[in-house]
Amino acid sequence: MKHNPPERSQDIVTETKKSFVPEDDRPLWPAVYKGWRRRCPNCGSGELLKGYLKVRDTCPVCKQELHHHKADDGPAYLTILIVGHLMAPLLHFVFVTWQPEPLVTFTVLTVFSVGLSLYLLPRMKGIVVAIQWSRRMHGFDDNKKMPS
Image 1: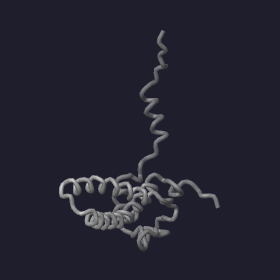
Image 2: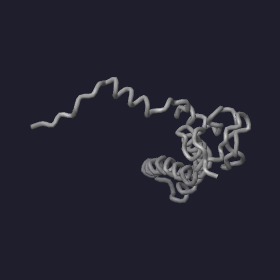
Image 3: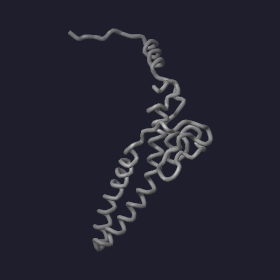
Image 4: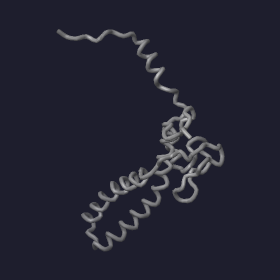
């Protein structure tokens, strides 16, 4: 004998989903794009970083508080992941195709790896902060009061 679940009206299911899903006033992809550009995820105009990797406490344009972020090691991990996945096939391709001297290969690919890492690291930090802002993580939620 099959067990059939009780039938539910589609209106009830839709109404339930609406009550649990907040309106998306902070869309993810525009925030990620602003983070890639190292701009404030709220307004897109103010500088997100002061210096190379230090996140500003507030946006100089819209005054959005940014000190809530918890980027920690995420940007470095993402940078290593991307650079490693680009460099491994490149190393294989270069070595199989041209068979250069190992020291030349090491020198060229090391310079390329360091340059790409230095380029990506602040952009990955901007993306991580922007995702946290978009998803209202770590104190970026305007509705919740932080304990003092």
